[in-house]
Length: 592
Image 1: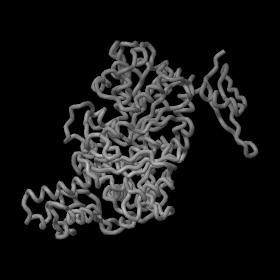
Image 2: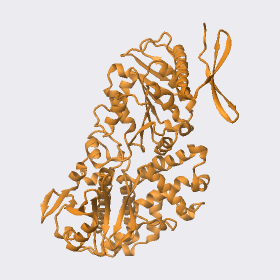
Image 3: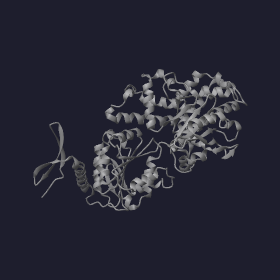
Image 4: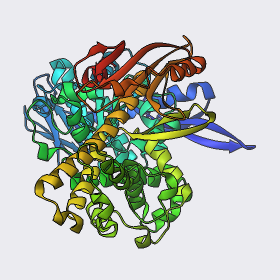
């Protein structure tokens, strides 16, 4: 009795939708009603039977051995063992020994902390979920997958496939290829750049409902982080494990790349551009402002724009629609990222482009104890701003056809938060508990440093510096740069402490006079720790004068609980001075 695989059709009767299973048997078409509770299992069975049928034509006469090599070139399956070619695939797939070669160059590289979670998913019990490995460019996603291939036993590697999709592919193309792989017995499938599919967000449930539910382990990876966030909120809700690679703390930066020192992290932190101890600074993502701006444009701005374009059929742009239609959305995102890096307040953004670092540095140079100078007061701000804009490749408001509104700023910053690029730190005012401000930190310090360095380079080209000697110019530039590093070090400590201690409230506390750079308060235990953060290698009494202030400490304990430690985080050796814990910044960050 010959029976076809059949399929599911739907009928609407009296406003209610019913499913019917139809198949051919002995030359006759048959049909039966499908109950709601049996529909998912029947759909999965039909898909599996179709996959086996498709796979039979592909694998006929082809035996994939543990030590064999197979890969897809130009869409055709090619094996080294017998040289036969099979049915064309719509996506590019790597199999067998090709995967071993794919992993060869990264075997000696140190692994990121998230590697164990990825391995745990692959070799753990099935849970009908997919694993989403997502993050901005150059944060180690594909490297983690390649490292896993390098550790796989031959038997497991023979059941693994690495699928690469591009913008020309569709979800239907990928679905067809996955059916063939499933039918051929492949168990571990890694799909790279899956967010390139225009219909991924709307149809992502396919991976969990059809394939993961039948025992296949599926890892989805890609750079469009926002697209994964959208899919996890809808199609893959409660059916995905998420591993975000964007945030790279100092401890991983030092351990994986072999670079030590907070200043190195300030200059190059934020990406995993290189692996191992040998590196070339010119090849780092944030080695110069040009590469940093290209990164913002391709990895951040276009990430957001592409995800919004593919989400709800372009129906979720909200107020950003006007910028998108005018071709200004990417530029607006670039402008806001640069704005964050230069510590602008939101109400400054619609004005002409200028930098907050410049005026702050001018004030501090005038107050320098050893070499006071008013040189920055005599700088031609218009010319410097023009040069800075050219270097940063950001349009001035007058050059934009659509003005950036506060709604634009708010929505773009929401997406930057979802990308883990920006994290807000509370700034509390002891005199007015209801008055709370936000300090916006950026998780990729090298990006901010590169744009700040561009500001200094522009300053040194100003006519006002022509009367200064080379020694004086270098001294001024170094002073400004160290000032920027100091502020960045403070933000790095605040950010990493907040990320590492979710059970505590991490914030800055301001008084009428002075502040604590960081307070870590545990409301459950009614305790707190107070910190000063200094970009210095020396110990000085003035560094901890606020920590010794009786009234500040008494007021702090009244509101946040018993002070259990007083600390100064700095670049020198860890020690105790006058009852104050001096903590080396690198040691502190690695301990989190």
